[in-house]
Amino acid sequence: MLSKNQLGFLYMFLSICAFSIMDLIVKWSTDYPLGQVLFFRGFFGMAFYFFVIPRERLHDFYLTKRAGLHFLRCFSGLIALVAIFIALRSLPLATVTSISFAAPIFTTILSIFLLHENVGVFRWLAVLIGFVGILVITEPGISSLNIYYIFPIIFCLGLSYVAIAIRQLSTTEPVWLISFYFSLSITLLSFFTIPQGWVMPDIRDFILLSMVGIFGGVANLWLSQSYKYSEVSLVTPLKYLTLLFAIVFGYFIWDEIPTIKTLFGAALVIISTMIIFRREIYKKNIITSKTFND
Image 1 (cartoon, rainbow, N blue to C red):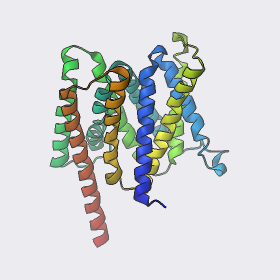
Image 2 (image 1 turned 90 degrees about the horizontal axis):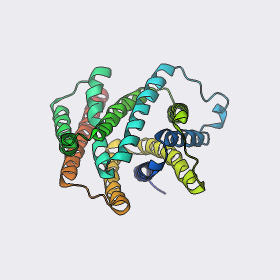
Image 3 (image 1 turned 30 degrees about the horizontal axis):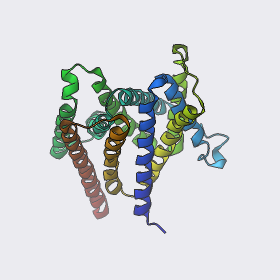
Image 4 (image 1 turned 135 degrees about the vertical axis):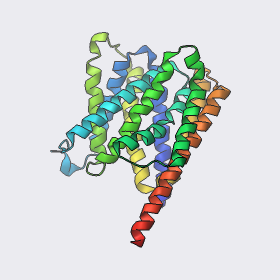
């Protein structure tokens, strides 16, 4: 029988594997319009959640009193998703993954304005280190006017607000409802791209494209389960395995070899996010200690 921390590790590892496979298929799918890939991500991700909705909620699972916040979460999530899909199709896998690690940096900045949180010296230092890491990674792209390097940064900005919105929604809304509305919004957005022309996939490609939605759906669920069973500080470092997977997949499938600059920049971004996570844990422990003493 696994302990709670072991279950948390297992769910986080499964989530990382699922997200990595989803990214891999998205990068492969360049023969299909982006909007069509979005449809498979949304529709099959949405269908998956019908299997996890409690039976007693099947007749009214869609009800919510926070429609406005759901809309903002979906809107920012769509921006992030479209941006990362474009980046995955246009840049080396390891480069996209490295820059995407910077999302907590932008979350820290947004939390000042949206949640009125106080950010101390250590977290500001982490933000600075993270931005240096992003500059190191993207410098070749910016110098050669490769516009695609901006899309992973847009992804980080969108995802940073998603993190804040989910933090607010999760106080009253079940995880499956938050994810369901997001998958629904992806599906609806994809319909507007039909006039641009969709390609009829063969059976093999249909199955692979369907996996984008299925793996995306289960990855989000496993990620939530990981945080439910284990402390964030214990399982978060496992996220950086995605860079290892990206390097391996990129090398063996697309002959992509990450540059020294990419790896060095990725190291700076990882150090930055680890500082932020450690300060969050320290801050939480201080608050808990004060509450207990009071």
